[in-house]
Length: 59
Image (cartoon, one colour):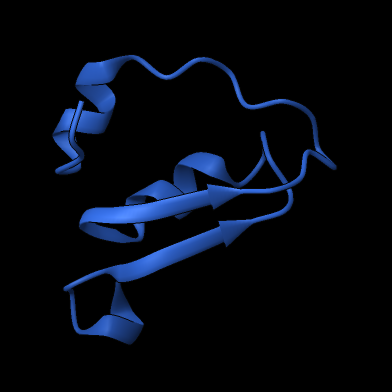
């Protein structure tokens, strides 16, 4: 958020998975794209739709 003056990133590419997913999610702009393409730290746990809604995602 600091690098985008608080507006958030358009896209976050995440190759790590479990350990970085929510941090990446919090750095997105509303309706930004999260692109997970690896799981070196393990699979991402299921995310409740209200968590996504809190950050401006479409559910």
